[in-house]
Length: 250
Image (cartoon, rainbow, N blue to C red; front, top):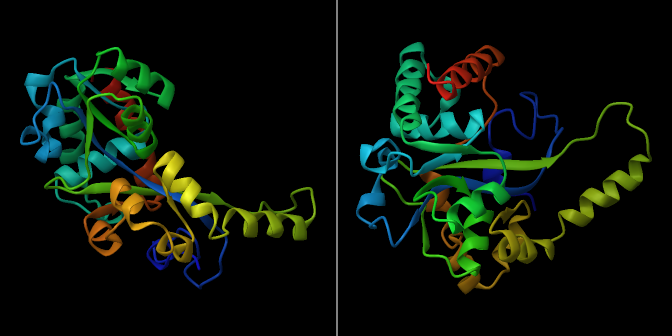
């Protein structure tokens, strides 16, 4: 019952020869959140808003190289970052430098992010589903746009079995079966705003809740996404090194 769209992601759950090594548990997005009392829906139609000088000092994105280059890749119209060229890398990095001029801080966890938003420190966030669900539940003036002109980014979390790890293999499989049970889907979606890896569980959920969380049309949703699938080690190292320079102001 694992989501076929997730299982099809290159080099994620299986190797090139079809050997499975990773079980998806939950998946979510890095997308645009904004304060509805400070930012209009029209202004928030494009991810380029993060580099708009109007929002200098009012932006936060994650201290996370994957999310940063996912944002930049979308802005330069690159949906498959495994095929990023040198020219595209330079273009993406240039956009992140423009964003840096507006960044108040680079968030490291939901607590920092939630406090900054409730404290009226930021107007624009490049963040995860859980933040939106939490802040919306607190009555904050927040909106999430997962239908920007450029699209959104999708990531997947899950489990692997470590080679020669201690413990019993059958117990590990029992655990994996339990967390992937269809009944877990509603808890993941309702509590955190994340999708669950079990497609049957997602399909059986209340349509109203799926619509509220943005999972009512998965085909359309997945069509506009940049999957954060693994990139070549040399490209990842370049991203890490360049992002450190950008955060330092270089």
